[in-house]
Structures are given as C-alpha cells and as structure tokens.
Length: 179
Image 1 (cartoon, rainbow, N blue to C red):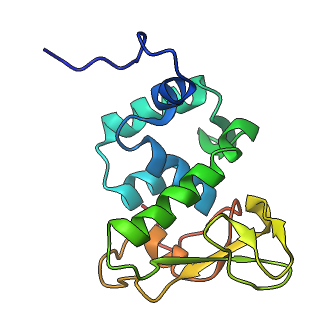
Image 2: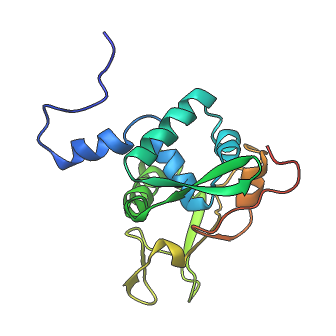
Image 3: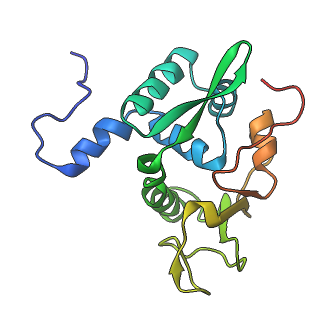
C-alpha cells in the first residue's frame, strides 16, 4: 500500500504545512532558493535529484504559492523559480532545522555560517543578531562555508558558487560550464 500525500485526518497546522513542504526534497529546494538557486538545471546539479522528482516538487511548490516562476530568457523562454512572501516565511523553520542538525545530527561543526550583513555578526541559534538585538530578515543575511564544510564533497558549479560568501536571496551565478 502506497503512502498517502496528505494528513486529512489531522486537525493540525503542522500537518497542513507538511502537506506543502514535507515531501522528500521539498525543503532542500526551498533552502537552495534562499541560497540564490533559481534555474532548473542548477537545482538539478546541486541536489542530485531525479529530473522527474524535481519537476514535480517545483510544480507543487509553485501551486502552493511557495515559489513563483519568472522568465529569465526569452528565446527560447526559460523560467527560474523565486521565493514568494509565503516561501520567504519559511526561513526561520529552515534555519532552525539546520541548527538542530548541527547540534543533534552531525558533529556539531557548522557547515554554513550565517551573518547579519549590516554588522557582520554571526546569527544566534534563533536567527537573531546578538549584536544588534534584532531578528534578521533573509535579505539581510550573508552565508559562507563554516568550519565543518567539506569542500571535497561537492564540485558542481552551484556548490562552487556557494563556497564564496553570498547574500541570501541574491541569484547565484555559477561559473562558465553551466549545467
């Protein structure tokens, strides 16, 4: 018997959220969208996800209003995927899960360091700037590899682009030889 794709018998907001972003790969697609990945082939290369699964997950995230399609090329027309306001509202859950993973599901060394752009201070575990004492919006966050990053693990163009300091939500530009 196949697993269902919804939690119809659960009267719970978490269950409704999981119906939108709880399928395998969905949260990693949203994470990559925060990192600036926009193009189908870049998601494909960075995630090592089957093409059909990526197509389905992107369609579901667009239908749910988490991502929207934007043309980035006219001839032939090609679309990228950009977070909507609802998608950007997923930053804190994604950040919190990553922090949980560092503490409880890995060696405790940060793979990625997130900092407040205006002051350069590293975010605290709740996603706030301890120096400015404010919650930080994704557009005011920069990311860079942390001490636990394994630069030998991934060598695709997207991973190489993300190995440089980068502001969240800013489109990444993988070097020549795009996938």
